[in-house]
Image (tube, rainbow, N blue to C red):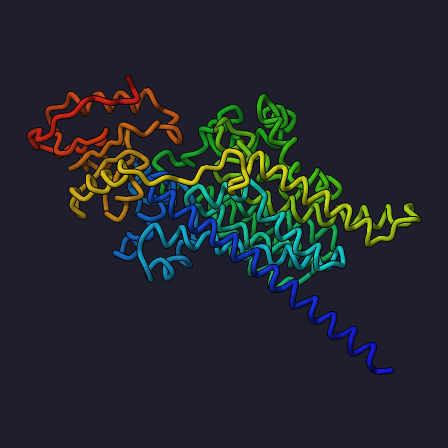
Length: 506
């Protein structure tokens, strides 16, 4: 009589062990692939000054006693004039173990992969299936906008993704101490993330009816948003406002005007957010989960600040869903909403399908979500099954680029093309072309890669090309290296290299 429970318990433990190993395998494969892919992109000069070079210079500067020092923004030497990302202070010890952009590229996929754990836990609990947990862990990691964020350099917003994942899971399961820790960590990653935490506070207050935790969350997140955006950023920004506020010029000339317009004329905000190509952003962001996330609209509402921040401006990379990094955190909300939505659908539809068991219905829905996720991955994903995926090729041209950059002394002031900057960013003074000076610092060297197509991230190609033509005609700089479209100019040097002008600006 005791044999049956023992066998049952043993079988359950084996199932649990299998699920745990399966989850670990998924996370390891994901991390290993994106680490290798990111490092290969860097070796192929496909990383950028905006933003890998920015983070590398800031971290390197901290090692040399200059906290938050950056010279790649125009007219400022403090990153707090652009973004409030105090997570830098927590990442700094890790960077110190092996200083270099490669450390950041290795760390980011590992951190994002950890977000699969709370996704698994929630799916297993809500759908009562370890298989469901594994499928949704894969769905989260296969969300193309998140993959793009991981693959596109290094960003505070991407680092925030796993913290938001744990914070949302802790909120759902009422683990408020863990929620507080994760919410605080998320808010240190970027100055607009407090708005996402504020929405969680409203959920706790109104839906979970916990005024103590809810009001505290709303109060702290609102206070930090005000301090970050109206005190810290203006204190270090030359314009006394965010350097990105110009993206929202249709709503106002400064942060206060933008917020006032949103409050007093929300219809205008909706019109801007859904105009032109932006409407496809709204249509497509739940498509990877077969639109099942729409069955839990409340979770999607929690992501409203991110959705509107990305679509209210006229900065295309922000609302190009599966490119760049701005939409990475949507993976958290869409995946959780899909889990909750399926659980709700099974509970509602189960009794109506008398000839289909809840397990069969759950399996059919999970299969549908997984197949749609894979189909979307083929169309827009950043893995080898994606139809536009290309493994970065390191060519002889890149070998020559390294040879050119080796001519630049470590203490020299440098102005360089965007794709060259991450390979030169461990220095006190470096500018991203077309920026040529800062605080009366003029570059000793100017490095160009004329075979680079300037796209992305140049949205000011005419200005950039005007500077290139100026370099070619300037008597102040002599050309000391020219090979395969790679040009290195040195101040007050005589030309020692002949070259053909192979400029993309012609």
